[in-house]
Length: 90
Image (cartoon, rainbow, N blue to C red; front, top):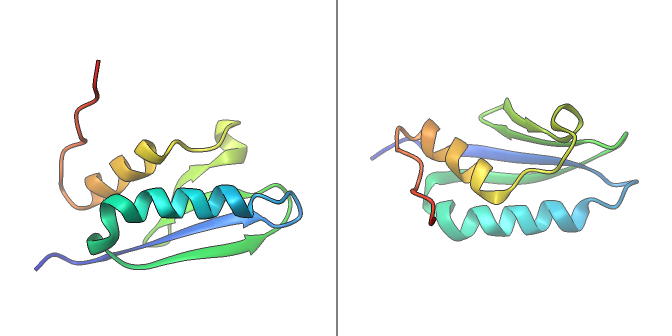
């Protein structure tokens, strides 16, 4: 049995990013629920929207200047699990 991962999404409560964080969590769970030991939504401040896998930052809205696409987070999870990214439709 493979090790399960933890995923956290820290979002700015002041900016009302809660809905986006919940939607991203739902999208990830639809594909990777069995691969996760824990998924947490962490209220923050200052415009933050950071996604961490096992405590390591994998996406920062401030650094990227945009919000993550669900496929980016799913691909990061797959990489941590030693799996190839899913092929994209052309």
